[in-house]
Length: 246
Image (cartoon, rainbow, N blue to C red):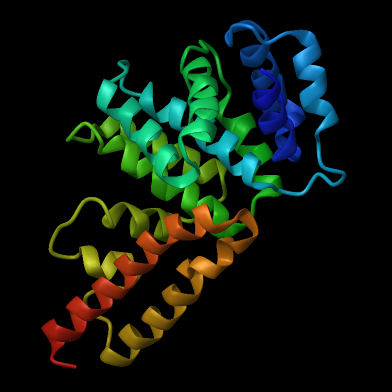
């Protein structure tokens, strides 16, 4: 448990306090076998001096919101659980992913979780680019079982609103996963009637918004995750340029 305690404390800032900290403390103390009060105190002793957002804060926020989305349709699909576990393995490696997934299973088992309170705490400490990355992952989970229910979409939409993510940003990221004739326009947050100049301007704006460098403060693993959104913006722009003959 020593390695787990070090992982839990070293990368966390704001999530060891507030409503998230309460949930985290319960799961660590009651769900994860072999983790004692002394281990939890050791984790607290590893806390960084400042309470700014750390890579671990993104992980905990992501795991909590993922648990909310997975339970939204009233059932827990193994494919959605596998998506979370595999994603964390790719990002962080096997050992760190194992720690994270242990917490995740505890979060999924929680009966009452206030998504609004969790999101308000996240919103206070994570910048806009980081919150967009959270939303991108949540849509990936919703589609992991091969279909997306309206209940899941509405759950993500509610979380986005609590996270102060605009309707346009919500639809942009949603369009990256669920394609139709106008998906490229929604990704770039413009109407099909937009001029060629407006298209170019929208592309430049979205490049700035979704650029992976905005997540450098969270480490290379999260920069790689952001690259997927960035590529979708580029793909949408190239598609529309070809369609318009620009």
